[in-house]
Length: 153
Image (cartoon, rainbow, N blue to C red; front, side, top):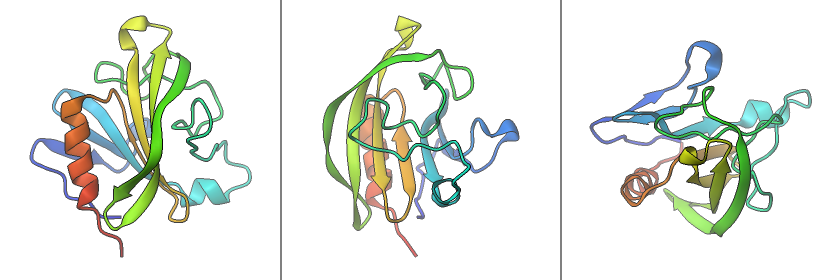
């Protein structure tokens, strides 16, 4: 998948320790969203991996440990524990010419000031996952525009 990020946004393909792998930064947020190719993890029977799913409470979280709340002030690896995750919207949504499994969760956190919404797009055949953390109307519109222009090849 190829996307074009607008000015002011950046992408970290790989980071030391892996905490920011696949992160799209946006101003003060080190990881406003993640765009990950999960083919290797999905095909490794020994990988600690849960396939994304709109049908489970933490369906946006692919790890097997306790999910974290990720926000502009708490990037991956430093966020508090997620204590709840409820689907508030689901269906299909576009990523370029493809239709992805889509959901929005209301997430509660051990630190209630970090409570937020998470959006997820999952292409199960391509094994591409896009996760938007701390969703807001402004960020939603920007991520939707980025994904609308996605190409595959």
